[in-house]
Length: 219
Image (cartoon, rainbow, N blue to C red; front, side):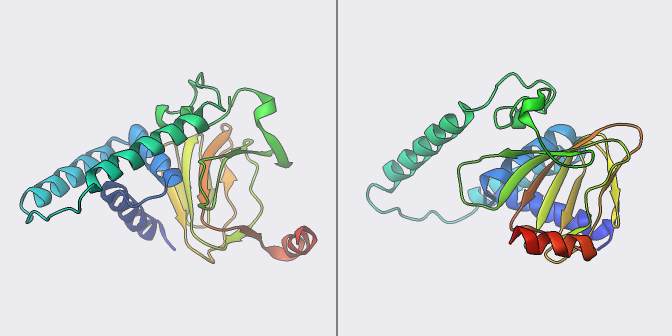
């Protein structure tokens, strides 16, 4: 997969966001991305305007009795659920982009991170649903994430710093999308710490001799 394919996948992700078909984890990731990327923000506005124009020109349909009340009740329930999740984390997280602040623990506190390797730490984020897993990763300058593949797509947003892998170089606000089976080894830039938000549909599978041994031990 090359950088051009990644751009196409990002465009598809933005369209799915505008259509309202993404799970919450990817919604927050996209909202964080467009808060950092003016080009994508303009694209989203155009998509939403296009959707509104299509809706105005569509034929009206009749709704079953009580459907509007049911919809509003579901929306209210969703808001309550979001508030319950958000109450478990710190709201004072000014180092993160605004859409993500209420979901992540304080990234300045060492207690918020779990060390998982040399120069590599993670922080799990709970969005209150069963969709895959979402984590913040902090990578020290020049350090790498072990070579791995994915059982399901992985969408990664760079929040600060940058990294390079087999498919390109990514900086703040950039999105990297790895499809099922893709293998890569992200390496953080030498000039600073890299923090990313990663949403995985399925588990990460370590590759290489050491990785395969660790996979067997984990199982």
